[in-house]
Image (tube, rainbow, N blue to C red; front, side, top):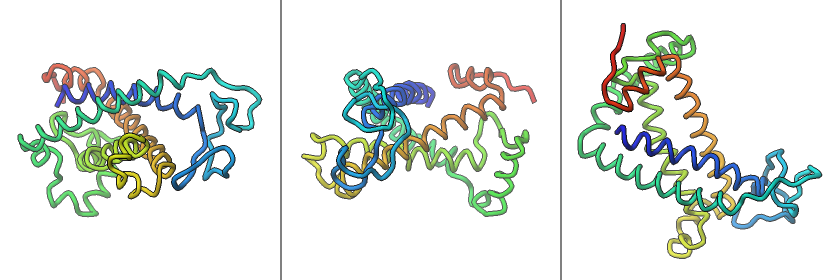
Length: 224
């Protein structure tokens, strides 16, 4: 778990940096199969572009870093995919998901969920949880990320690859087209980024040094 955690962290940072650079080459989003500067976008990001042919409303163009960023983005995506696959196989075979991530039925009741949400909003000590286990919101958030957002971000990424969709056209057809896949990819990436920043924020509140040491070594002293 610790190895896949840090490999995923490395892949995510590389994906975020390279993804921003790729975005700057065309900060406009469309829906359907096609999209270009002659079409009205679904929405635009109010930032200058790294290509002078893309209308953004700014009178200057950013340096074009599209080459290395696309290469790094693809390589980091494969690292994320294979690391995630290894995590799923080991987690399933060892019972990690069932014992650590699946909330007991009592915690799935609205009253328990509401109490956990209130504790998090108050930043109470109970919201930080036991260092060796996950509370209800943590379990639900991790399940959503592991089995929802990460597979979806990989799927939408592959749906933008001409080589992949030429072999499996249903990959992009189910999403409504390549531009639809790109738009969905953007929103899922935003959701994952928000999750990471909330995760880091809770880590600081819970004790950054202790928790990071535990994730690196597997051992840490906990002072109650």
